[in-house]
Amino acid sequence: MSTYQVNQIADWFLASIDREAGDTISHLKLQKLMYYAQAWSLALNDSSLFDEYFEAWTHGPVLPSLWQRFKEFDQDSIPLKAIISTTEFSTEDEKLLSDILNSYGDLSAKHLEELTHSETPWREARGNLPIEVRSNNIISQEIMQEYYRRLYQEQDDD
Image 1 (cartoon, rainbow, N blue to C red):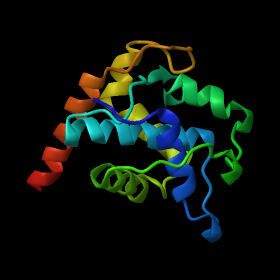
Image 2: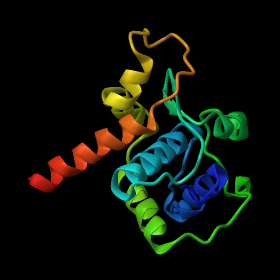
Image 3: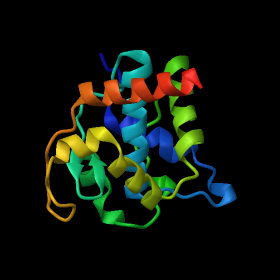
Image 4: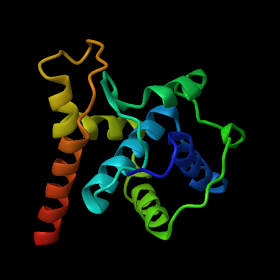
């Protein structure tokens, strides 16, 4: 059972990057950080952070409501003033979000896009569609959970 809204998680990422050090976050990158936050929450905690589903768009997983909110920024950095909420997160969820930012935050939006394209959940949702073909196919949370849990177990075995 999720306890947060998509905007609360997105705003956490926007507020948590080190802007003074020059860190920025584009709409594409934010979508991918949100995807990995949801995926790893499903895999490690058996719960979703939020109730919305990702769609398998051309450039990777996308939350349509988040796309609507930030589409005006296109490929530009999303400014701090775009934050609309501050939320108290559980210790467990805050740690998960911090781990996601630490693990994926230094990767470029393009690298994150390529990474999601190489992974089973997005690929299965797309099926045989060519990369350039639009799709709003839902990415299965069950497949996300299984895939990332397996990745975690493989890392744990090493």
